[in-house]
Image (cartoon, rainbow over all chains, first blue to last red; front, side, top):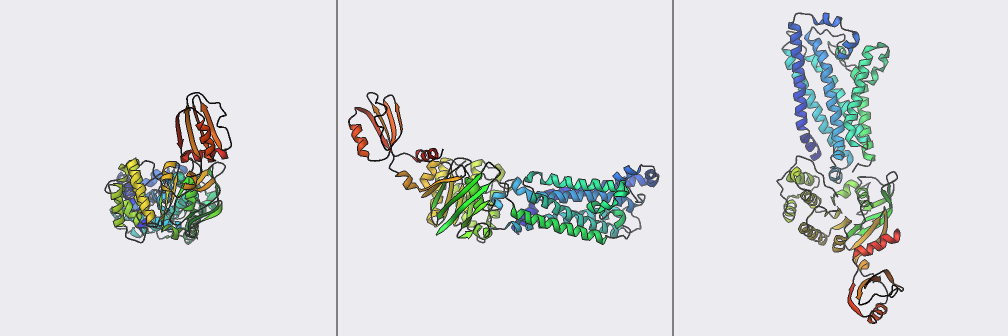
Length: 265
Length: 294
């Protein structure tokens, strides 16, 4: 319990900054929508002329961006990127920092097992990502509410946030697994982000060339896409199972490898 | 009873550093010195005892229990001061010590106050703002606040001024009188000599000798140095039991072990200007061990 509280406290400041960041992201995203929609020119016409590759990279596909909900679907991709980067870096850092800051000779000589330390740290990280998710949800609902006249999209937003939550947890334990396996703790966070960006690039590549669509199981960014999740689509059970499976696998790797290895002191 | 029992402990890191086949025991109530040059493997041995790293082969028991299998249980009664102290930034000394105390199921507030007073440590300062010596003091208080039965110190005196060292040694002696066993690693011989009952000498990852300090000192060696009015023949004192014979002009020095009468008779025949007969200090005794190995 003491480790958990200590970790929550020590990540409080960074969490606040991330939350402000995601709030501003929603604000700026939606104000752009306002500019587009008030300019009179239909966004859809503009996008029709856009090369398919550019549209894919920017995340416009199969979304009716002239509607607030469609535009939100576009924005969601960026919110998701932010949330997962936060989760991956947090998962890696929270494990690796004891070795990075050389405090392991303090913490690991205390009468607590390594498993207890990992559990406390992952729980603290979990609290962080849940907070981040709720703040994203809250900002989205409040700000979207101003544009979505009449149409209720709260449940659509809720569904995307549920998908985001699965991926946040997944990337958090991916980060912690990397930190647990790697002997050089300093680079754990950057490696975790590199893996994340790689899977993101793969998801863009799949959008560009439909003949590699089979690879979509390899990139979590394809699991809960806004266009599938919104408008009553809900979360695809297959991907929910895959996410939970991967999360379990990375958690086991985190516990087992960290227990066995020498600490870098 | 043996508080620490190390059996054939080996830890290899690739080619270079590591320890090979280390065995020794520390008995209850002892202050046990662990001495050797930098990089000899002192910290590696200690970190293995604390299961921060795992041995390649061999084992160690603390309080009669395997130090890996029962690590969590054992650590309740261990206080550890690492050679370099690093703490969480942005914490006050008080907060860090309370955090440290929160791991032990006892009320340590009184002890923290006492220790801070003895070590002259300001509890309200931020750890970031402390000097190296003051950080070391935080480490000392942190290591002792739960009144552990086994205190493991890895080069504890670096950064402390002589006055603080004295206070720290007094503190350790008081803890020892109350029943604590102490493992004291150092490369400074005089502090080990001053504090310890027994000592293990480690060199290049291997234990060279385990001796009582008193045995080491009363090893019968005497250090002779004499000044004569005229130079001596180089081999005047050359005989069984003589070591390190150096003749430098009118000054001759050597170490001798054996029947002192032989030497005294020889000296009596000389016309001497000055004479010193001294106990060799540990440094010279250790050099003897080191050289034997080399």
